[in-house]
Image (spheres, rainbow, N blue to C red):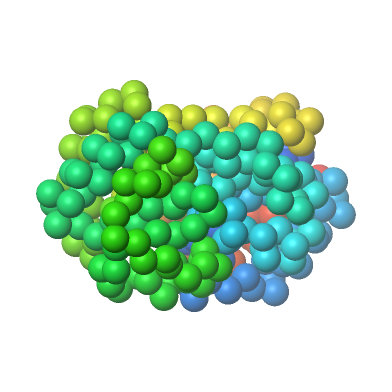
Length: 282
């Protein structure tokens, strides 16, 4: 993704008009150890007291959002699988967009050809074929799931929420983003959610469409939303929301897609932005 000149920073009046903040989770809301800091929790509560709604959209499965939804006291819709599954707090699914079976099969074939371990999310499960990766424990913490080892993905491909290619070779993952994306075309959304994860989901499972839906569900005009993220899969919502905010450690292309850059996730960048919104209303 080629960096482009960043759009003008929002005015104080634009900041004061924000009524809904949609946040990515990993690399954004939580710290690198997946913890939610007390500073961020307090900032969300201050924002809500000021009349600003807060919600989440993530590449995680729905199981990985529930605890955060509860701790943050979120009352409006949230999005899992990059917006592919949209649900209300409590678990009621509003919309679910699954990957076409042929696209899921082709993805697995291409990742196998590249020698990349594959994860499949379907039927509320995290499925693997037993290939260990350096990111297994991290995914257990994020998804709040243990992997189920299956000999073959074929029985699940018609119900796939997400196929993930996993590799510590970041250059290989970047290359696969291009090649798998070209092979699948309009049949799938192919994007890196982390440098080591290639996510393949249904076309509608993208954070641009997701932030639009979450704004409608909350009864907020898209112009009065802000979206915060750190990776390439966040760029569609940073461009679609009224105000796009990149984390301080985000790659240059992600920062260029935003109107503001906050501090890093380790330095509570979400909290700092929320406090800026509250201050603008003062």
